[in-house]
Length: 230
Ligand code: ADP
Ligand code: ADP
Image 1: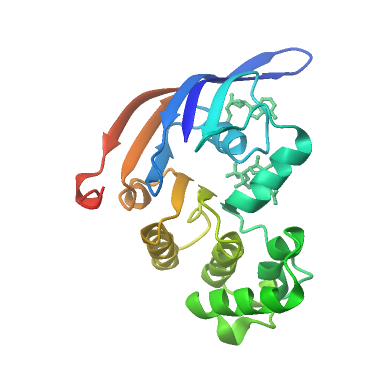
Image 2: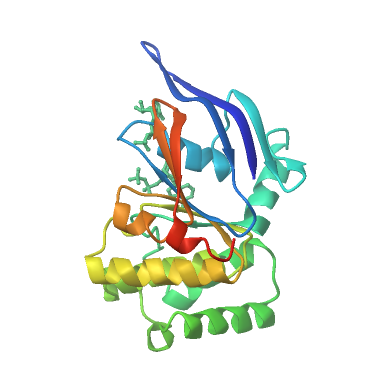
């Protein structure tokens, strides 16, 4: 990923807020990067732009060789569905759907045939250790299990990039660690991860920590203990 001079301004009737003020950020394929910084520094905005959920005013965002900011709406949405997975703080599972159906949803969006969907969902359910929860509804699960389902849903399409916004924010520390270990395993299979976090413990699982302030990168730190293979 090559992000150059990204600017994002929110305009309301009274005020203009510069949320991203010239962000430059390169992420290598297979890297696990944490984004940290005080509340309001632009972390969520950056993640939303990277996830093609929000459009910046200017700048460049290259993913392998594709410039993503000039894609039209349909191309953006296709690119997102094929290449990206999302994990949110509040899980964002659909309460009316079972665990199986929640995980299956991105495959339906990608028009994968039913037989193949079933196989892919069952594979990931096994990998996430939630086999006996397949027919349950989200409200019947603990927070840790819900986040495992959310991680499974993010992974079932085998995305190149996973974007995680405070993935352990609503979990106690032991369930939080389980989710971080899942993200690490996923990263070890080659998936690039960009995670926003307030937790330096969670950030310690990543290869590199980027610090934002007032909409730009002020510093970065390589995590030596997690970089032997890079
Ligand atoms: P963080 O995730 O680091 O807390 P955000 O990206 O949410 O920061 O916000 C960056 C800045 O943009 C803040 O000043 C915030 O108030 C502002 N902002 C975020 N979203 C909106 C919005 N939809 N409308 C107006 N201002 C916004
Ligand atoms: P926060 O960490 O700031 O409480 P969330 O983790 O709930 O925020 O969500 C992060 C951002 O992703 C928000 O801007 C939200 O609008 C957006 N978002 C949340 N859920 C979805 C979804 N299912 N699809 C697309 N965008 C979403």
